[in-house]
Image (cartoon, rainbow, N blue to C red; front, side, top):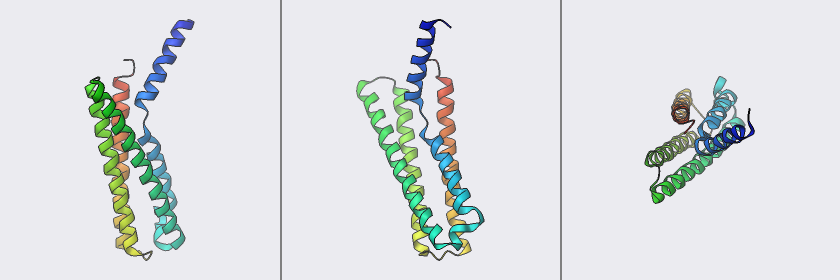
Length: 156
């Protein structure tokens, strides 16, 4: 391939990676790993140490969502100020809102777990599991929407 074409492709890829990175995809993998580690076989219900480790992991995930929210909000505000690419600005705003909703879901899971004080009944576990699956689905759908946007706008 010609050097100038290779440079052009590399520049487009850098721009696309910067503009369309998908932090939700990474979180989706984290959530799957946490599910396998703590929710499979009701480990958090039966193991007090695992219960608290799971809460610590959820708090880390919540901080990541908060950072994502701030980042997308900042990007949306910047595009709005410059009055450029209104659609992308709106997309960033929606992604920031999604991150905030996901953070709220994580907080709800943590509060539900704290209410049990480490002594989870089967119904408590099912409630935590249900909230967690709702969170995982929300993260997955958001990641898929970013992928769709990325594919639609790959070479622009």
